Length: 191
Image 1 (cartoon, rainbow, N blue to C red):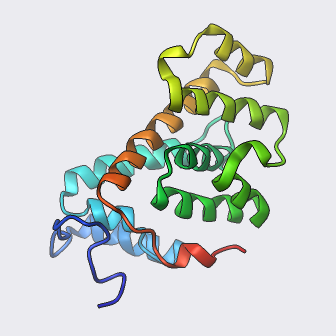
Image 2: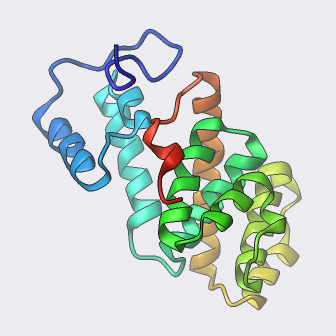
């Protein structure tokens, strides 16, 4: 079997067959734009309601208009995933950082240790907050939000940073719990 034809997780949860037309169209669009259907979507396709909820929130957080650039949102995804040691998201979103930044080095630095990455002060403040939210969320206080404001973020931006970090903390845990495998194409992408 090819990588795409087998289950992308360690769980025996096969995709609904046939996929509903809207889901198939979404998968076709992914294949056209990305050259693949991300395994996370295939993994969720055992339950179309869960897939739709996941994809809807992901697309809103990562692609909708925001004071955060798409690159900054992907940087949060990678930094959080690195802290959580989530194989799937480090590989998939590391590729996205490499693509959006044009810098393989930035993608690799964020995967290994975001603190060694060449970051603007704004990005450093953003990732400091995402790290604290990931490792010690109960300790986030007004001084942390103020540090983001001082770095140029609006309160809406702070919401978006928290929402992206929170989303990836959840998805990292699901991906790790299910041994979700990244698509092989991500490994060599944008190097």
